Length: 149
Length: 130
Image 1 (cartoon, rainbow over the protein chains, first blue to last red):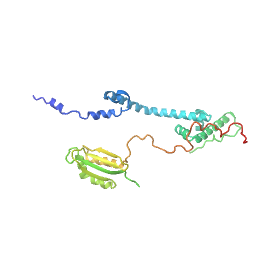
Image 2: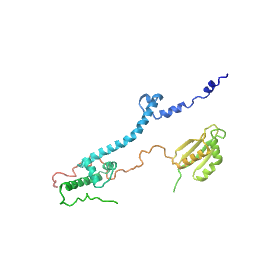
Image 3: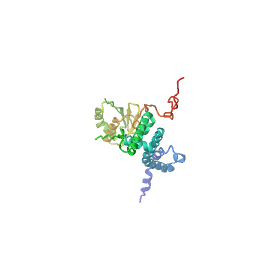
Image 4: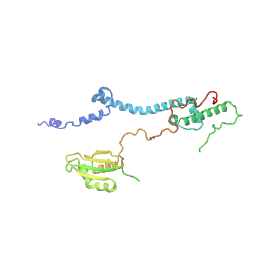
């Protein structure tokens, strides 16, 4: 009986180990502590980092929307309006800008934002007149709705 | 008019190695067709023994891309070559935003003093010029 299995095992050695390890470590280079050097710790950290980044893509949308809302609130308070009044009156005047664009306008185009705030304020006043004035005054100009169909 | 960004394609392979078989078949069969179909790409075929078979693509902006073609068939190498011919030399990284401006602000960017009243926008009782 010839023992064939031992020489067969020894014939194939793993020569790629360095590159297989580097594939994982390259994603861990900016970590803190031994996780950026030691493979065993790095594997766990890199896997958790990838999982967190996948899950965070859904959170990013929520986070950015909250950021835009904060910025619009700050900008509209400078012009004497609260966020809720601003947004609701803009929608009633058929200005369908999303929060991202309004936030960018507030940062880069302050005069445009001031005119938007003035529009919302005027529509608000017309809304109050329509609700409290009881019919005898003419209808507001900015309360007219344009149908695009 | 379309300008192809791929400048030259260097096919480096060994005339005897086993993993360069696909490269040799490509050179025998499909390289001429590829060169005729892409007249503005220069195709260099240089055999060098002892090295792994490589497809070097150089672009007009200076980037050089090396692709290993060891163990690939002739059709796969042709597909790879057409893919490289359609690329530009820009780095293949995630583009953070699909837009960019050098002048983001037309009316002047907001700063804490934009909406504050100043001495020029007098808000008190009218100052008479003396």
